[in-house]
Length: 442
Image (cartoon, rainbow, N blue to C red; front, top):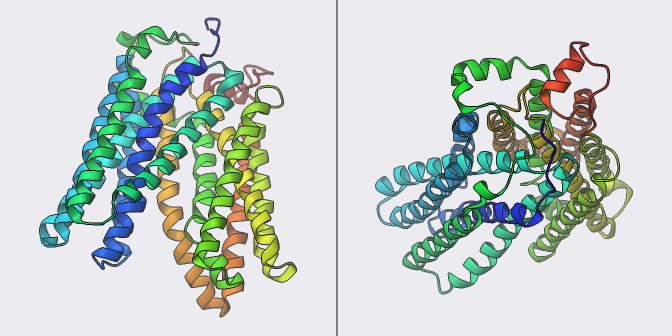
């Protein structure tokens, strides 16, 4: 491999503008349009739930998008193309929801198409974006790069939710379409500004296989799916993200039903969790470049999350509402540490023997993440209802779900340790076969 150039944080931030775009459209989809369908249109919550699940399902195509960007040795066209499809899907989704108010037989099928486009746009843009950063950032700075990208996506979600919420008053379907179009247009513009001339001026930190030698997708997929390190890491991503996402839909209801918190208080509790996530990310980003490996930070974040969830399960018995906020903040911080370690390690677990296959492997990991997130968000709510029904007590029902999440995080930590300290997939598999004794630290 060639010697790595110094990491350009300015260029990482420019890539983060595309992450802001993804966060902006995600906020429209999961917050604004979700609420309008359930409240203003009086549709069952299952309807937006199915639409969001469809957008996760289509992200199984991430590996193909990653492969194509590997084959062409170009990332920016896929990032920009994905951002354009993402923006178009966001606008179409708002049009579909507005139409559903008067013409549901037209609006709902259109909404299905729109959410599929959103999933495809996120897949093409997000996979190629991570591949670009993974190829250009020094290994010791991957944790910091992961934190910056994630924080910028959260920023996109937060700013869009606040700005769109204010712009939608007084509400009308026409205003919904206009505001959505403006948000999606600005999102696309941010992606264009971030990518303009960036790929040509930002040198890679790793040498890669010439495009002419690229195998077919089937051959490349067979090779990658046969790598023990890639399979183990994909399983780790799935298990960890399943545990991570199961809490999304049950934490605030848990606070209200068990501790009697008002809607405003439970919303502030969610804010404390997000504050903890940011603190955990920043701390892990600063320390991971100096202490330990990204794999170790991911495992530590998983174990800390498991402990926090176990504490949450026991909290109604051992303490009161005053300890809830501190526990939820701690859970958020642990989740933030896990996210930085896992995403940074994901960037490192991408390079094959000649540096090839970065996008394809990231696509495999991204598909595992999307599948886990889609399942976890749905299963978390269903599991809490089932557990409450079976055990006949709200407190015990939620405790069972939190304990299950805790066990999944423990399993994910074990999987992270099993991956080893290697810097690339090639080195991990070489170590697995006994060809090398010591691999580079990530």
